[in-house]
Each structure stands twice: as C-alpha cells, then as structure tokens.
Length: 142
Image (cartoon, rainbow, N blue to C red; front, side):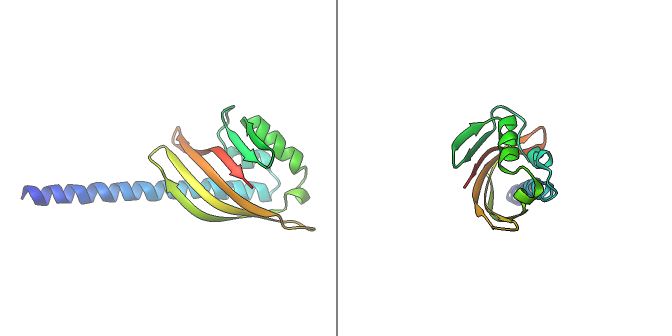
C-alpha cells in the first residue's frame, strides 16, 4: 500500500510540474506575441514592455553588447524611426526551454516585411520570472 501511495504522489507531483511548465511556456509565448503586436502597431514603448526595465538588461547585436532598458529603447528608436522602417514583424519560435522556475531560454527567428526589403535573422533570449511575470533580461539578435 505504501508503494501505491508513493507512486500516486509522484504522479500528482509530475502532473503539477507539467501543468506549471505548460503555464510558463504559454506565458513566455504571450510576452513574445505582445511584443510582436506592439511592434506591428509602430509602438516601440509597448514592445519594450517585454524587457526587464533595468540597467542590467543586455542586448547584443551587430555592434556588440549594450546595457540598459533605456539604451535598448533608444537604439530601437534610432534604428526604426517610423512605422515604415519597423515593417511587419513575425517570429518563428524554434525552442522554449525552462531552465528552472525562474529562468527560461528562447531560440527563434525574426523576419521584417517592409516595402523595399525583408531583413531577417535569429535571436536567443534569456528570460527571468520577476514578480510573477516573465521578462527578457538578455537578448542576442543577429
């Protein structure tokens, strides 16, 4: 009987962990979808809500690492000064991996459709659950 009770407790714990992982996975995808929707409205400030609002945020692009939420936002505004420059953003999410209850890794591709071109590339993100919400704390985009 003890073995059966232990087995049932393990099953219940695994089910609870799986449900929690599924919830976190969905929450992470929602952060990215909210960013995509904001971008496609030309709303960089809305897009930036997916990032941790901290000087510790790191964004790595072609010019190397840059630190801070405001720096990242200013760089986005400089590189994408209007809706035409922003284009229509789509993501192709390749992998969402929960590292533990506090951190997650995302690998994906990005694509911009603009009137004269269609730049695209890849990104890796490190997200942290802060006060119950997933936020990007590190972004490496190419």
